Length: 491
Image 1 (cartoon, rainbow, N blue to C red):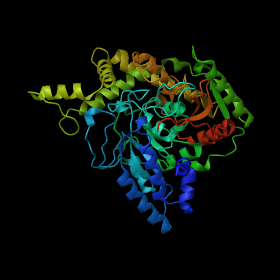
Image 2 (image 1 turned 90 degrees about the horizontal axis):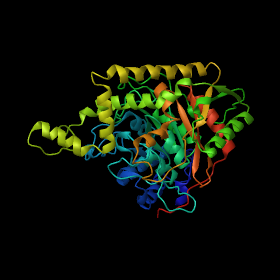
Image 3 (image 1 turned 135 degrees about the vertical axis):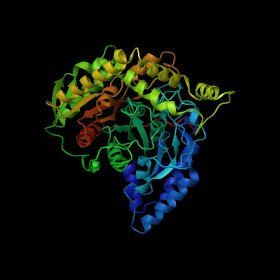
Image 4 (image 1 turned 90 degrees about the vertical axis):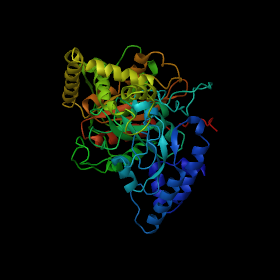
C-alpha cells in the first residue's frame, strides 16, 4: 500500500472524501511504513491503537457525509505539542513519562477537523538545536543521503522528526514549531515545504515553551497546497493564549495557484553572506528569474540591521528560555533525581534532566538577565530587534514579499558541527530575522545540489499576509517542478 503513503495530503483528503480508500486503509499503510523506518528515529512515541480508533471514527463520519477538512488524514505531531494521555517530552529526559491531562489548541484543532494522530515526532531538546542531535532520544536521520555516500545526514532542527517523517512518507504532514528557523531549515534540508506563520496566527497554548515571544507553530508538508490546507486547520484565535491574534483565518488554499503578476518581490542585498556556496547563490538567482517570468516585479531592498539578527536572537531566546525552563524542578511532573535535601533534588534533577545545549542556553540567558548585564545585553538586544522590525516595515513600502535562500548550505553529516555551537547557530542566518519581527516565512524545495541533496528558497511576507506567500510559493513550486525523492535505504 505504498501508493497511499506517497499521496499528498490534498490528494489523500480528496480520495477519502470520494471513498477511493478508507481512513483505516491509509492509516494502516502509514503504520506499516513507520514500522519499516525506525532506523530514521523520527518518532519518539507511536500510537497505532489510537490512530486506528480515530481512523474508524473518521470512516463513520465520512459515511454519514460529515467529514471535516482533514477527515481521515494521518499526521505526525512534534513532541512539544501536548497530547492528552500521550507522553510529551519536548525531546528532554526531564519530561520523561509526562502524559498531559490536556490537549494543545493546535492539535485539538486538527482532531476537530478529522485528522488522525500517528504518534509523536522526535526533536531537538526543548527545540534548542539546528540538527536534531540534542534530543535525549537520539538524533534523527535524514532520509536523503549524498550521492555515493552512506553517511547519515541531519534532517535539520529542531523539527527534524517532522521533516524526516514527511520526506520518508511516514505521514501525510506534521506539526512543527519555529523559534529561529526550526520549520523552514528542516524543510529545506529534506525537500519538503514548511511555513512559519505570523506570530500569533496559531495558538501557543499547550506547546512546551522555548522562547515565548518567538515560538510559533506551523506545518511541514509535501506541497504548498498541503501546507495551506494544514495551516488553515491549525490556525485560529484562542482566548487561552494572550498572544493569539483575534483575526479571522482565511482559506489559505484559495491563494495557491493565484496569478502573481504585478506582485513586487524584494531581494535583500544583506543576505549575500561571505562564504555562501555558489550553488545557493545560483539557486537564488534562478528563483528570481522564475518569479520574474511569472510576472513579478523584482526590486532590490536593504535590511541594514540583518547582521545583528543572530547576536540579538541568541540573547533574547536564551533569556526567555532561562525563565521558561525554571519550572522544571522535578516536583510536579517529569523526571525527578534523588537528593538528601530539597535543594539537592532541584540541582540533581536539572543536572541530570537537561542536556548540554539546554544547560548552555539557560546559563547564557541567566547571565544576560543578571543585574550587572541586563542593560548591556538584554535591553540592547531588544532595541536591535525593534530596528530589524523597522527594516522590514521600510521594505514593505517597495515590495510585497522577500525572496532569500532558506539555508546557507544543504544538509550536513550528523556530528559535523556539534563541536562548535557557534557554527551550528549560523545555520539560522536567513531564518532568524523573520522570527524577531514576527513575520511569516515559507521554505519551498527548489533544486538539488551537486551531491543530490535538496535546497530550498524562502519567501518572507508582511504580518498576516500568508496568502501572498502561498501565491508566490505556488508559483515557485510550479516553476521549480521539484519531484525528487530520497532513495530508500532505511528498510
